[in-house]
Length: 272
Ligand SMILES: CC(C)(COP(=O)(O)OP(=O)(O)OC[C@H]1O[C@@H](n2cnc3c(N)ncnc32)[C@H](O)[C@@H]1OP(=O)(O)O)[C@@H](O)C(=O)NCCC(=O)NCCS
Image (cartoon, rainbow, N blue to C red; front, side, top):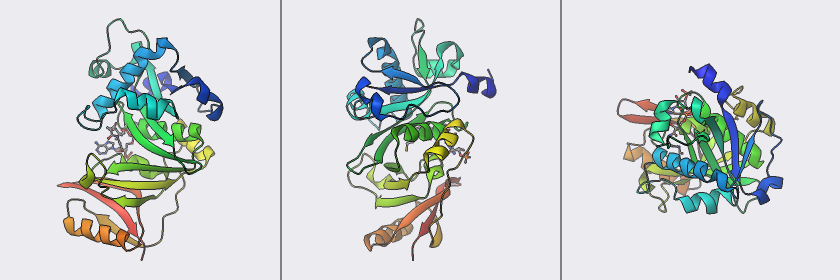
């Protein structure tokens, strides 16, 4: 099945608890019906366990940043929703079935992407803590994140990512990413990580992004000095850290991240 044929088979899902349904924007129209999966329904148990395996596979397993099953329930499904795209088993590429170790007799849907964010104490702000996609390079992660943020009705998002992660190319499509904490000490990979904050595009733009019609939301590039930041360069890391400690501000701007010969480069702006 080619990419176009697969595209028509993608089904958006919202995995949550029944009590959350009135608080989510399920009117979001991306040209195909949203499938609501209630965690209370035992028939969704196998889907949840495949989704968790999928997350574990994408994030390096339980010893790295794979999400424990209880975190998926306590921090994603109960306070919010896990949102993504899934495929009927018969239309799922065999390589994904194998990667996710799907049982031969499983006839249900197979999750191929996922985003989850939970509410924060700040109104309209969510904390995003997982994004993955198994159909890479086809815009699925961007569409997944946009769909979820629209359904959450979020206006701001905070999150943590790693300097080396190409997912920065996805996050930066939602606006200039303001770096708020450089190398947070409280993280599995503190030296590689940073905390960022996004002011999100409008609902309309998020929906267009979720449809795949818009690749980027509108984004104002903050004024300041442009900087090609090499995370392997400790002098640059030191300068960035001092800039933030002294009250300066720093943003990642599109395209955000690119692979280089010996690592990667981040596209940044520092205020004066
Ligand atoms: C990172 C990830 C979410 C991207 O998923 P995706 O569906 O391929 O993403 P999209 O197609 O929406 O966009 C991908 C963008 O990132 C780029 N990209 C994705 N993976 C890349 C890689 N390994 N190397 C270089 N660029 C990459 C794509 O080229 C594209 O950018 P472009 O269109 O401007 O060229 C996916 O690879 C993944 O699940 N990774 C493992 C989990 C993870 O690290 N999640 C991020 C947590 S912050």
